[in-house]
Length: 382
Ligand code: AMP
Image 1 (spheres, rainbow, N blue to C red):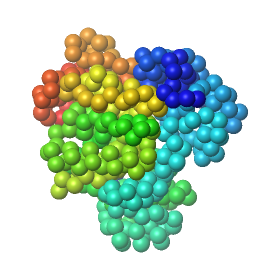
Image 2 (image 1 turned 180 degrees about the horizontal axis):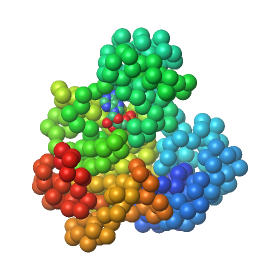
Image 3 (image 1 turned 90 degrees about the vertical axis):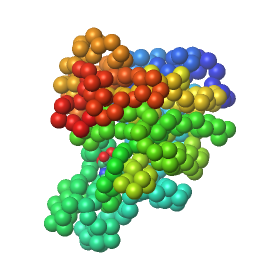
């Protein structure tokens, strides 16, 4: 396939979730078709895409059928096996490259890569036994977080270590999976940057945003982050350094902590659209999903500018999904629903965005008022 992809070419997306759905909608606007690889017969992405292959992500026949139907392959979901990635890459161009996906799939590879590129992270150590965990805690100190190196998300596969007595139980709960110990960062804020990089090295990054989690799941994103200019600059420099060091062709989210001293440390990277970039659909002329599609299709990258400030609130589980009629009836809330049949607890069902004139993002207490029915529960600090 010759890049840039011509109109009506077919983009293959691995994964059928909401990130694939919103990528497919952006692709359609640019005149492309999407073909989704998903295990689910009625996935959020395949509902809005031209076609789909229903298969396990590790099943060679399914991967071959998917690759045969598309011109270029990208991802909304990263956890494809190494063999699966190699098979796909032998059949069609894969963007971002399999090497980038392998780095981001494994917290040890990811942190080694980041530190090697001069990007600061929490102190960390690979842990293969309880003795190694004790030695790592002696070096890094407590509190610390023990995590599985692979397949963890939204706080799954993690244990907080506060006292030496916690070590054995945490190790027993997570082993025999490969593990990493990370020093606990007493962060002042969690921030992220979403950036795209093209095959010619062209680069566009959205403003740094601030993320609030609840029960380890993203709850709110505030765009822009309310941080000093120096912190914003650190975050932007780090994102570009990571994209360049990866030789990225595609989209990348960099999740970071700001510590009490204003230092920026990377928590993790995701080479795909990211929940903390959903606000860009409504607050930017070209969203993270459009930049994702443009980057993998070899199209020029527009600047990642925003015309408005924004607050994005995820709608998680049955309680928040029940607010849907009230959200629809509230002027100013921009609703997005992902087409999932069942609102299980912890499941991201949709999101709402509220726009503000640039420079007028409300302070702590104004956010809940601005979101009206979608506001976080009153016990929250916002
Ligand atoms: P992760 O799965 O690594 O993205 O972690 C999920 C959430 O757990 C992060 O967004 C943080 O709120 C928290 N967390 C993870 N690692 C650390 C750490 N080393 N220090 C403090 N908080 C952490």
